[in-house]
Structures are given as structure tokens and as C-alpha cells.
Length: 99
Image (cartoon, rainbow, N blue to C red):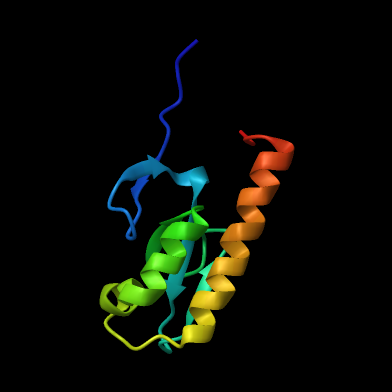
């Protein structure tokens, strides 16, 4: 049986390549609104972030997503992203890696 190729994406916070399922997508739409894209299918400019709450906290201090999307992002978005990543990380640990 042929092995399936695992799609890899670069985490903008840590600059490492990880499987797409271990990342969450952040997207900027045509209106310039930044949002979390849990499905990975929204249209717009996307960036991937790992499910590491410590990396998200560090990114908040360095304003990494501001540089990636070339616009100022509200601190509340970083808090929302931290809560989402923390929740998803807990789900992965509780239910195991979904494939």
C-alpha cells in the first residue's frame, strides 16, 4: 500500500516545519480582518502557528504576527489565540493525536 504524503507547513513563530494537523491557521481576509481559521479553508493570506502556548505568549511580546501580516494586530487577538491554542493542546493531550 502506498504511503500518503503528509502536508508540512512552516510555523511562523518557531520557524520549523511541522505537519499541517499540528498547526492552526491565522488568516487575513480582503477587508484586513485577522481571525483564527480552524478549518484551514478561509480565503485570504494565511500563516500557521503551532499548538504551543509558550510560543504564542512569546509572539505576543515580540509582535510576530504584526510583522507577518504587515499591520497592527490588537493585543486581544493574541489573548484569543492563546486561549484557542491552549484549548486545542489540552484536547490533543486528552484524546490523543487525531489522524
